[in-house]
Image (tube, rainbow, N blue to C red; front, side, top):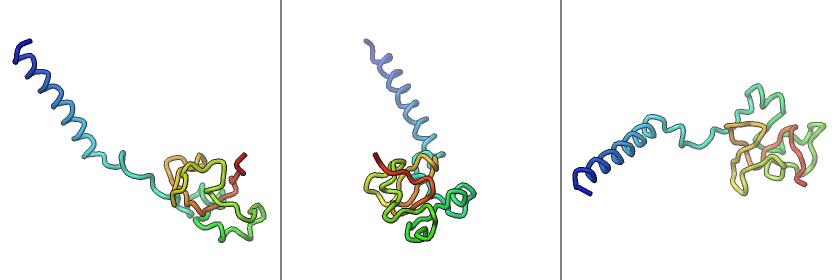
Length: 105
């Protein structure tokens, strides 16, 4: 294999890497954390979402001790914020709650 061929391959690889890096630099939101659910948004209000379950204690569907982190829809592990299937592209609070809360099986 000649050096010319190697140089072209290297150049093409570097060009592809550079293009990918440029795209990432122009679209940092692709790599940013999902934003937190806004409790004032229409969907959050419809589901009575709160960042702190204590604020929902008087809601008729609230069960003592239910929080996002012990809901079957929670995808955040032990994190303070995590994904939820009800709010795609957003993160809910570990200690939050909404009326979509489902006990883990």
